[in-house]
Amino acid sequence: MKKLKRSGRLVDMTYFLLQHPHEVISLTHFSERYQSAKSSISEDLVIVKEIFEDEGYGSLLTISGASGGVKFIPRIHPEQAEEFVNEVIEQLAVPERILPGGYLYMMDLLGNPKFIQRLGQVFASVLANQKIDAVLTVATKGIPLAYAVGQYLNVPVSIVRRDHLVTEGSMVSINYVSGSSKRIQTMTLARRSLAPGSRVFIVDDFMKAGGTIRGMMDLLEEFEAELVGIGVLVESVGVEERLVDEYMSITKLSNVDVRNKTITVEAGSVLDLLKTVELEENK
Image (tube, rainbow, N blue to C red; front, side, top):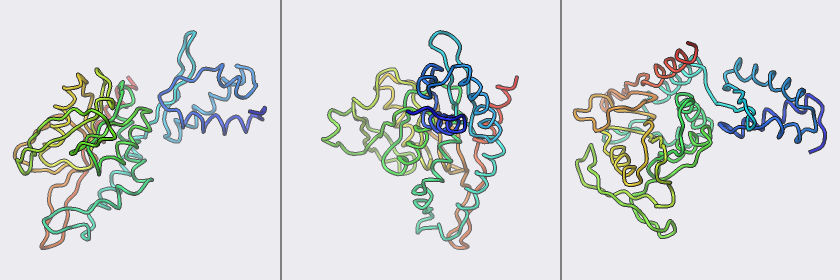
């Protein structure tokens, strides 16, 4: 790269850090990249850090030691997250979303890149201080959300399927009981997709009784992997028997009135968790 003026360095440095979250970048790397003294790079990073934190993009940590440098941790301010969750509630409550049988149409949201990226940022903010090795979801609706979370955490995504794909090699399969229909179903995960001992975050778009997520939790045991957390876009409230105890949700769906075409949605637990994380960091 040619030698840049300070304004150019700041733009390129900001873009580079945004593309490499949760990755330690040495001062030597930036010094060689911009052909500038480390003292100048340090001054630039102070400016980037202030902007990141003031605008709610995240935080920039300084890592000391011979192998140290800086690490960008994506975050979202609780106030910004609350504004976003309220927007989600407003969009989910649109009567036209109601489908026969009381289901909700959500593919317009799950197919919206900006919406999905924001969701990923919210979950990643709660997990900012956790060591995560992989994000796990089940095909197909959870895939966009899983990749958004994986991007902000800078970790790979593993996809659980209900059928065996020859192109994925040998698979690990388990039977699980669907929480809503109580039917026995099968899910599979390619052996090469998840390293033994991985610390995993499970994410999905919707949770009713939690049978599918419970199945993924059982599947993790076959890989000797550790469950770090669970996140869902929408959780159904009022389920008699929940198969999952600890999880975070963006929203809670308490009622879908097909006759009167009304949908009752409220904020999930993620906002309280974000505030808790912020309080712990400010101690």
